[in-house]
Length: 174
Image 1 (tube, rainbow, N blue to C red):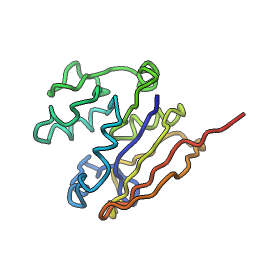
Image 2: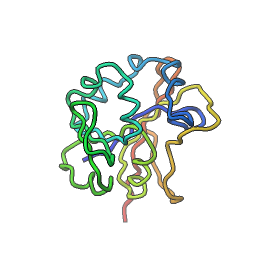
Image 3: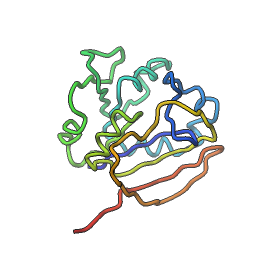
Image 4: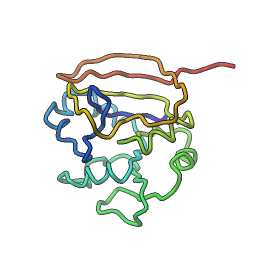
């Protein structure tokens, strides 16, 4: 099993503005300019939080956004408005541990899910696209505990105005 974060942040490290809006992203570029499709096709499971799901609900045809993956939303809600998304009310770390070992897992969205997984040393790969935008305040990607985590840079790509940094977890040997 490999756990991936794939997403875009601002130059100052925010996933969304203080109101959870992504207008800054939509006004900067297009996902069609990236390797998104190839990445998505390599994923088996998608996990997101309710705030990220709420952003998806604003899109047309939400039922067709992630058609080939198992899609889970960490939430207290018992049901969701879109087909193909399963609500899950449990600890994210325990949930990820019970997923089959041969699955690739994409963490979509924010720090509420990323922080506990980083704290538990469960994020294997990060593909971070950086948009040439400064928000000054907003929803940060990284809010994990203050513990040193090391990743190594595998590759750097440019897609239009976006820089993409591809990192993998640094394997330590004892």
